[in-house]
Image (cartoon, rainbow, N blue to C red; front, top):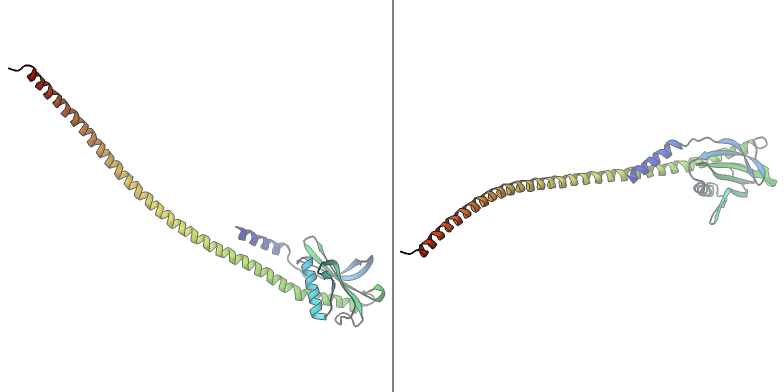
Length: 236
């Protein structure tokens, strides 16, 4: 039953939280200032997403994001005065805000040049647009593996369920064999009981006959003894 319950939970997760790739223009508040951003909602939890982001930027762009690691789990990951060629040929500060909203994780990418000048669609359209391309690259790198693991987890649950079902089938077959043996044993005992009942009835009948014969013999012996006594009392 535990495997069935787990399988239902996985099915419910997939049916209610189906992932859609919907990256939208947004606004993010950071250190009391508003920044134009691109945002998306995904299913994986925020902490796991931050770790994946850190690995992705390190592997893809050789950029070390701060804010997640040993004893650190901030809402905003960042890298200061770096150059990410896929975003801009200028040095900039890159930010990724990752927070949980309801049962989903919201990711927002935004950036700033020196003196906290936001990367905006009005002043820096191409760089701003490249934030979206970078987010797509991350999502493309992260989500397929995430959902592959989810599918594998479901497959593992299904396999466990199949094995448990096979075990239950074997147990049922064994129990049926045991039940059949018990039924045969009960039938044998019932037949023996009927035979013993019949023998007891016959023996009881013989006992009654024997008791009647015994009474007759005793009566005859009493008569003989009485006659012998009379003869002894009155000799000729």
